[in-house]
Length: 335
Image (cartoon, rainbow, N blue to C red; front, top):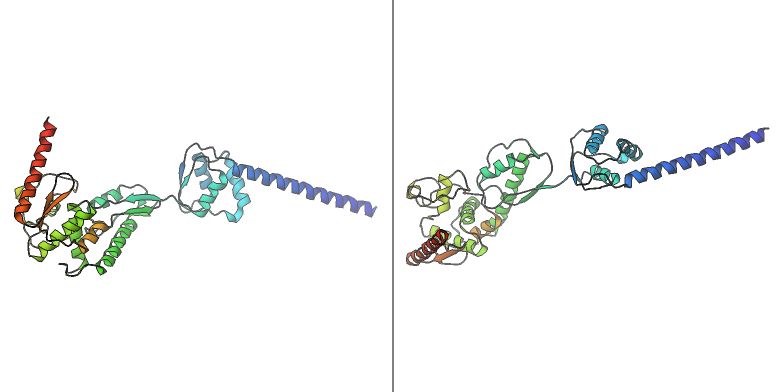
């Protein structure tokens, strides 16, 4: 009797174990199927998970974004994952048809989407700040408009909810570090008392020249003039003082040229009070490594380049060529 009962219990235990194993295998097979099944979303989807969001909120976010085939799929995946799934906050890009396993992996590992901001050479600090203020994925305020020239023109990567001031700080730190390193390797006998003087010169070069060769030649002209005690007579320095909008290209008037400001290099001697824009690294290098040249003048050639001269007669001839070119273009437009 006892032996028969023992055999029954033993067989029942084996049956329960086999049934449990079969159920477990079935659950995991079902789990693998829902985890590996292509997602229902037809297009790439962005989801934003705020700090402190729990599983209920995250499940709702994924469901509203069209990521889940069924709402309970998230619960099943989370329960089986246990502590191995810890969602992170951020903005996440979930490519079209990404399966649930990959979705949870992206969120668990915190692979936040990297956005980018490009600051081009030659813009003013106020314009950079206005651009950053208008970017909805950033947070917070900018404390104040940074000093002109202190922002490094470059492409910056950032994530959702990055503080605006942090981005400004990165731009300033990058510019400061590059200027310090470039200053150490500068040419000898330059007319600069400090790295800030070189930055001011670089900002003028940035607005005057567009090619690497022209930058170094413009740098040579401007440094030669400073060394000889000549005024720089740079049009962009005049425009900086009379125009709040750096994109304005209104012709400079005779009155503008005569108006004394801390930037008008037709009136003041030496460098302007501050940089007139945020120069890029190529212009900073040109300011610290001018070409070896006796040039003292330059003027536009009307086609995007510059003509250089060593004396006033040659310069006046180049100016005449530019005016003839400009007149020919204007006549061509009238036809």
